[in-house]
Length: 267
Image (tube, rainbow, N blue to C red):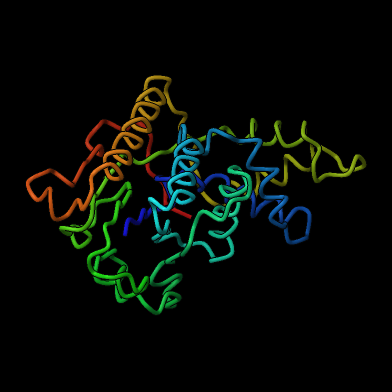
């Protein structure tokens, strides 16, 4: 049994800044936005997705269809609501022809001090908690991708890919510009300047600093996405990985490459 598990924030993409805009837009419109709104908006800002991530997910989709991969899961410490995380998951699935790719979502142990995931025992990610939450057999072979390193996730049955965090900020003026040009949710009678002023005031409340990514950093991100694919292929191509390859290195880190972008609090 082969399982692939992703962290969410800064692994699949960078959702902090988009989350700030999403909340601010909902306040401005005075209504709850839906999944289609989320999909339409996210399409305006492809930079928030890790390079080549859709191709990676399509690769995993084919592995599931051919039964080479039994399950794909999310194991996250995202501090947003479960609904927010499901919006992100549903968006990714919409990009692969609405295929139901993700089988299970394991949310944060606690959000705002309140326990929300009762199968977890700690904020740290651990192999023991993961098995408790998923009820997978102990011999399941797991490929785990995360931008953070959790020592208690290291196990003979885990192929751990510790990837450099993916961050990509977009100036809020550019975010507003793309949104206004799309004219997706605002009526024609609404004043663009009023909208921009409102959004800017909301953004200031978050004390969020936009640090733009250099071209060199983005090229590194693209290379690392290729590395992810190489390791996924390696994981699937090795039969009975944990038993036949005890001497192989199963912990792969790309976190030591210099990251010039600051890491903000995850949403």
